[in-house]
Length: 345
Image (cartoon, rainbow, N blue to C red; front, top):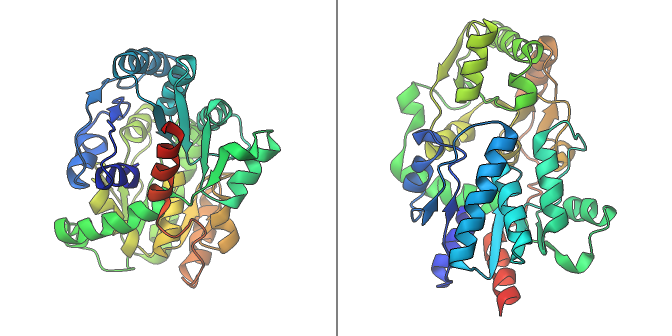
């Protein structure tokens, strides 16, 4: 959302940031605002963790209270989190216009909580900001009227470009971790379908061990608190040869992405970022809501079987980094703000 915030600042649009606090550790919360030089949220619900019902219920109640007092003309939500679901429901029930940024993404896997969240948000939104033509087609196939859909490009392109400029002033992740460009692997894995199932998490751990044995290169894994908790509960030792570190600030993480040999992930946003950065990606999932990355060749799906993970990395290690970025020209934030302003005039 940072490009949208910056565009509101640039054009003197009256706006405020409502942060639910769904991510509550410093490195997954406050540090983003500080590092990206963004204004602090006007409101923070401090929801914290819980079951999907607990989180969504707290978000719905808290957002409704704030919308009652602030009475905005339009609410913008981005992505597929429980925050998006709760805020979208609160807005729709109060008859406040709702815009969904990154609308139309589909994994076609309803076992993923994120898929439920994005589908519901799309079907109650007034303005659907689709990042690509494929996303628009998904929405139209589900019966959503074309006049409500706007193909804007993805704000991830704007964000990566803007954030890299800030990162070069503020961070030096390679020096901190004593790494050389394209001489290490970067890993993220946090999604429930991977880390809450012992067989899948065990497969990822073993895959990382095979990776280190095969390449003898550093493997850096900024681990989500959810993942380290599950590893302890399942009695899984950290992967041999992998350096597990605390979650990083966005600027350091972006630098590690930009300079990695290959990135392994189950994150949708990381699939997009690596595509934009020209870095090969191996996705440890069975499906993706970012099929554009598969089509241009920046990413492959390997699941969580250890040998498949290793084979995927071997393929992508030799990949030419000359694919086309399918996510737009870096002006999505400006387009979205212009459309939102027009909706309130």
